[in-house]
Amino acid sequence: MNKCPYCNTSYNEILQTGFVGCRHCYEEIEELKKAVEELYQGKKHKGKKVNNGNF
Ligand SMILES: [Zn+2]
Image (cartoon, rainbow, N blue to C red; front, side, top):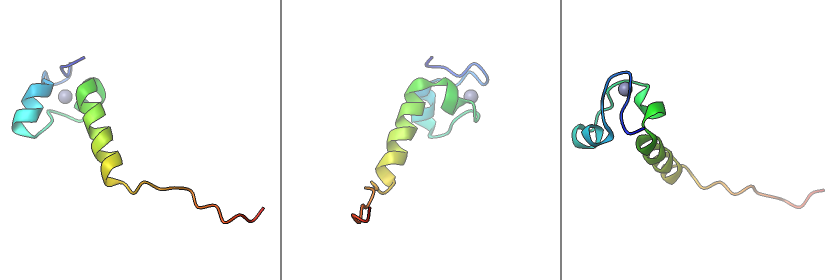
């Protein structure tokens, strides 16, 4: 879905304004969800699990 059924905000509108209509937008608008996830992953430290070799 490219539009939030709760507040009727479309992904393009969010791109233009920079604001989501409501908190459901993150869940309902798939493009936004993906974008947020990618952003979040990009900022997050790519944590490699450090294995010290102690078995
Ligand atoms: Zn919404």
